Structures are given as C-alpha cells and as structure tokens.
Image (cartoon, rainbow, N blue to C red):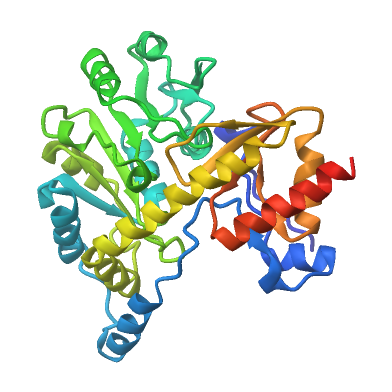
Length: 366
C-alpha cells in the first residue's frame, strides 16, 4: 500500500531552505580527484587543526561519563566563557554552535504575525530561522559600500518586529558595524537586536560591553571559526541576565555532548594560541588580497574577517566557481545575493598560493 507524504506545515509553503555545501567526497568523485586534494575555501573555517587539544581530549576520554547527560546548565563551560569574555556567567547561554543560538532567539521572539528585520545581504541563516518560526522577513538593503543603513533599519523596526539581525564582521562582505551604530539601533528600537560576532577574533571589535546596559541586545559567538572547532559544534550568546533567563525558556536541555564541552573548555584555556592563529590568518588575508587585486578582472572587497569577497569583471562567477572546483578548490558562489561575486576563505599560505596559480590558468585560457 502506498502511503502519502505528510505535508509541510502551511506556514512553510514556498520556504527556501539553507543552501547545503557539496561534500568533498562528491567533488572528488565528480572530477576524478583524491578527497585529500580537495581544498575547502568555502566554509569560513580555520585552516589549523588543534591536534594538541585533541591529544589532551584523547587522554581524558576513558574517564568521561558518556553514559550520562552533560550538566544541563553547562556551568563549567559558562565559567570558561566568562573568563574569556569578561561577562558574568549569568549573562551567558550555550548552544550547539552559533546557529542554535540564533534559532533559540528566533524561537523566543518570533512567530506568525511578527517580522524580522535583516540588514541584507548577510548570513542566510537569519532568514531561515526567522521563516521557520513563521515570521515575515524584511530585508534592509546595505549601502553601496556594504555598510549597514542604520537609519533604515531603525525605521523598519515597527511594532510587529520581533527581532533585528545584524552581523559584524558581516558575512559575506567582511565589513564591520561600528559599536556606536549598534548602540544607536538598540536605543531606538523596542525589539531585541541580535549581533552575530562569529568572526570577532579576526576583527578584535565587539559590542559585548553594551549587554549589561541594554537588555534588548544579544551577542552570538561561536568556536567554529578562530577556535578551529567547527566540527565540535559549540557556540554561545551574551546578553543581560534577564534576557538570558528568557532565552533559556526555549533552550534545549542537552544539545551539546560531554565530549564537545570538554574540547571547548580546553580551547578556551588556550585562547593565546587562538589569537596567534587569528593573527596569522589576518596577515595571510592581507597577502591574498594583494595577490588577487593584481588580476585585472577581480575587484577585492576589504574584509575584517577570515574571508574575502571578490567581484568578477568580464568573467562569470558561476563559470570560475566550477572551473576552480575541477582543480579541487572550492569557493562560495554568492551571485544570488551579490552579482557575479565569490567568497573565498583564507587558508594556509600553500593553499592560497595554489588558488592564485589555478586562477591564473583559468584567466589565461579565457
């Protein structure tokens, strides 16, 4: 007997899901490459593998009680985050990566009949988590230099607005939102304002000093970028104590594993190493930007993150994206939001040099 598919709930009719990245294995099979030769410059992750931390974890594994749930309050990890950020433990919420922290905010403040205001283009998951909750999304276009239109954002925040999403440095443009502009927004709107600081360690600029004074400010961070723990899925939010209490009402009780938490605490104890890695990436970002700028048909947008946005002239981004992939180099085609543009994650010097060599081949062959 054939059973009919259960239908999607009505509020998600026409919903566009998050765009999943193609796997390295699939790329290798498609182009006849070895999986280990595929370079991921599309994920905005760190090129450094924290082998020392993994070795420390390996020694601890026999004594980790994986048969039990983690402490639901994540107190030990929140204490480590408190030491790293300078915020009180009661101003910290822990999530399964920054994405769950974003979803928790959406679950707490968005529903059908409310809207989310998003400075666009930006991280696509802002839209995704908002629409999953049934909210309408209003995109406020960025200025020609990709700066946030602060006045337009404030004007867009009416009585139906449940959340405003901001990103600094912004993904995919790499530019910063000034702290005074964030302050202006939170002072002039009644709804919560989420500021995604996933790339904070590369810019060094944060608005976390405002959270105690502004209960409507929520700062989201992750250990997926500079901390090299994208695969461990650990993130956190910083907000006023009363705001964290509200967010905790919808937070899942056990979304992080005891193993991920142990690894994350080791990472936070080694923040000095993380700062060193971040400085190396920033230095390499500047070098790569200079190399890319030498191509006549590439315009490089200045970035404060661990990636570069490039706009192509006389060549189609989709074509260049596919040709790079055939050489085992994967970048992000973002032409759907920024015409004829690619986003490139800064990798190791060797991998970045490989990118330049392959681009030279592609452009020379027309």
